[in-house]
Length: 460
Ligand code: SAM
Ligand code: SF4
Image (cartoon, helix red, strand yellow):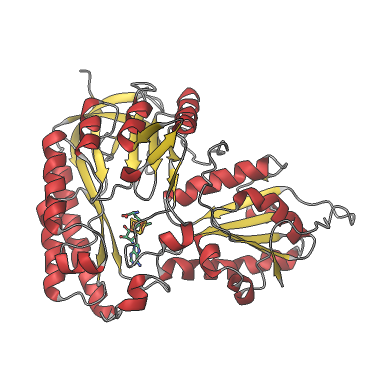
């Protein structure tokens, strides 16, 4: 039977077996999960655990999971089946499922897969050491309590990103929007904003240790709001304070919600050169009827107005979006409205998904998942084909222009080339010369491929 944290711990160490204190953590899903894994490694590190990249030498294997679409969960079940052989070879290895899928399925994870010793939701990571100890003593351990306060503000994440130049900092958790298709509010709980002082401290430390590009993360950053000692900090103020840490620090943020994207925020971005000229603004659909069913709380016209306003305040801003194909009852006309919105906006980049019904959501309870799979696939492919064209157009427009590029490291294809990003979040590859990771360099763009701009350094 599964048990929660706080139970009597009868450690295997007490029974003479020396526990292996190496933790291997595999992360699925969004950047929030990556940031959470860094918090988890920090919490375990304080109890003597050391992170390892080699699953075979770990005494503790954690899978940080995603529930956003059915396919994400399928991948995790199939990964668990490949981990079986490790457990067969060493029965003392503890396997834990943590994050969104743990929260969604709770004890059912253990019923479905006996390999799993530990199930921990996103707000219970402080309990991990106690839960691991419990699992080590032979009990299944579960803690999936959600919290109204937990932000892990006092925990310094252990950076697992490899380049040492760009990093992510979580500024809030949970979500109060109830988009009808989305499982996030159920698995990550209510929205709460992290204390601004702790955000500024964490980013300052990152800057001091060489990081030059930081992305502030939340499901809906525009609704960041923290009142402490009677002082209210909204997202524009937090962004401004972060940008003021140092002009050499680039600041990004994700994700914005079109209903909450304020003129105030856009004016703040325009005032600071080091706040990046890129906004990720998920549209999801171009049809007002579908947006209403999705409970997105904006219309196509509102979305268009937001983009026009972005362009008037920040003319060189790039735009990316998320789109869902084949939501409940979507007609061909609705789908064409999505394509026409994408075309009108001329997005530089987009993440596009087939609608995947998630149990317990409002859409699953109220609307039929009635678009046949082959139609969802066809509509998604039409979106992808259109976006490929839009991305190519966006890159072609950059040819001949000079961009300031922050160098992130060697290019994937050649050790003689370096790779970095523009403020618009476009990847640029160029000859190495004597440049180094973490430096800014002016690059004139000479050509482009489907994903990359290619250029050469220039003196300006
Ligand atoms: N909070 C962000 C927002 O509101 O745009 C993003 C949250 S979610 C992690 C990222 C994207 O997954 C969403 O923008 C949406 O396009 C997609 N998504 C969420 N639920 C989905 C579902 N049930 N089926 C398909 N795509 C989904
Ligand atoms: Fe999900 Fe909507 Fe919240 Fe984004 S804003 S996490 S899509 S409920």
